[in-house]
Image 1 (tube, rainbow, N blue to C red):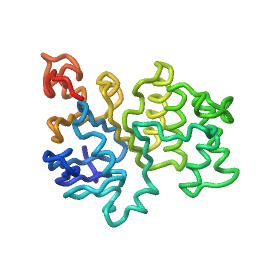
Image 2: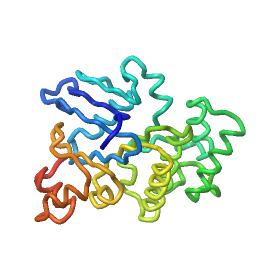
Image 3: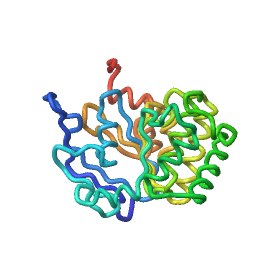
Image 4: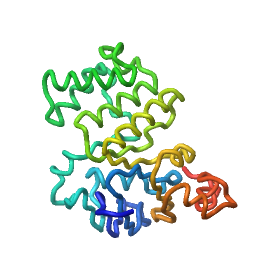
Length: 250
């Protein structure tokens, strides 16, 4: 890749209290403007920890993160204005409606009034949810909740979007709609960093991927180039299994 990285990670390490082994161990990585970058790994590999640090939710034990030229430690408020985050667990209030949830999140980003409502309704319409805008989230299917969860992270049109397992456990139709939308916003300039267990999805979606295991990045590159470098393994899933092993993870 050429040009300046939009995200720079330098020697990033994170220990959790009571654990002798680091969740991530001396990671260094560059992600470039306009990429769809996949962070792939087994359960417990360090994906969510890395995303959480990049979003400013956790402080690293050591190391440095720059986002769009800003040190995240000393400029967190500025960084939060240009990033969107969609967590693995659906972060919606079940007793509130979709419209109420999204209004709440929009207000957190400083969005108000008619402009916010118009943004919400346009996105609900795109994701096929405009007719249930005033229904309680508790009545929604898993796929519907995932779609609202994604909208919440997009309302302020972030320059960089972090997604932690955005399509886990949902129906095929919802997955297709979400992935198609991610491709569209990426075409208009949004840089996307996402974690996934779905290797075929990552192979088709990402411009580059990093495979992480036990807190260490063990391979990085364009998915098709990684496959061509290991023709005996045929696809990204087989390469992933080769690099991380078949041992079951909790």
